[in-house]
Image 1 (spheres, rainbow, N blue to C red):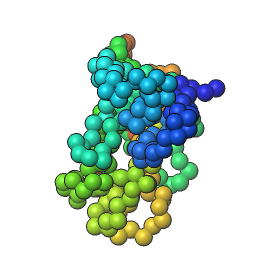
Image 2: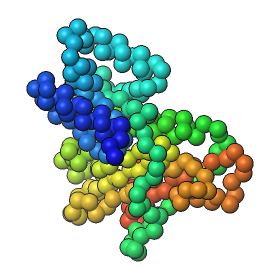
Image 3: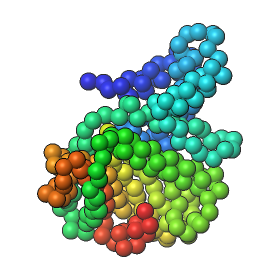
Length: 252
């Protein structure tokens, strides 16, 4: 069954075809596998594809501001310079569920899992999760764009990029974001760590970071026996090669 976000993406593609409008999908959108992100170009083509000549771009930008004010769109602001595209996170299109098939365990003895857990008293777990996803997405998008356009400071701490824009810089560690997956109460990030002068093939140093809000009913909720009434568990787990955790990967 097609979900709402998939239907939205299909509508964008159909509008592009109908309008004979062509543009390349933003690199950050490509790594957001099931995380509802839309670009300003996507919203523009959807708006113009509604069939009315009177639908001006000015009216669209006004509508975007209104939807942002009421929380239906969450802008992931990047640098204010030419060439930077505005992206929007759409929390209302997040699906329920968790990463299918993901496990804390691994058959590889060189792969370890390190977890941190907190007990939180909250009646608005979904709102708390959405705000965390927004902040993480905003930080990642801005870090990737800063390095892409060469305005980042302190590059020695690592360069953030996507697989579509890998820096040809062998002096500093690279953090290559391969996938971002978000659900209502869970998020999964797959990040490759490439160390300076590394001769290893790509994809061998992948760290998976899972962030989860929930209770005893979820298999990803850790330490449920100590939860009190009205408490939820926030769990963050880092899973990847052992050597990464005690090297450049610890900077994440």
